[in-house]
Image 1 (cartoon, rainbow, N blue to C red):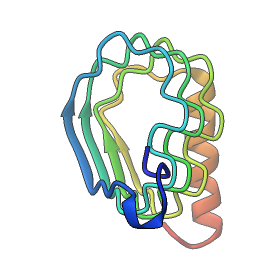
Image 2: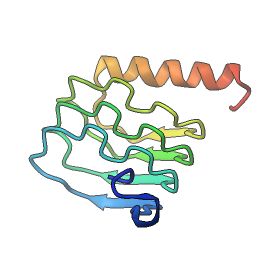
Image 3: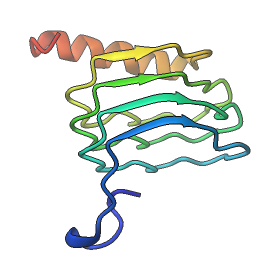
Length: 116
């Protein structure tokens, strides 16, 4: 989404609040390289999504995410690649085991880099 178009015509997204994308299955690379995105709140209606791989890849200024239900997610690989400033993940209704492992590894990496 943010990587679409040439450099002068890119969409600049700063935050996402109260979104309800019902019946989506694939959010692969949805916000890839949205470098101005800082927060996502109450992103509801994701209980049907099965693929969130690379969803926030390259969102280097993303700080917080809250209000997700990823209970149907099967592929969450690289969902937060390059999210070097992500410090808050809260209010997740349900997490898949794979997503939980990824979040835990991200937190451990950030601790080792003295980011937390």
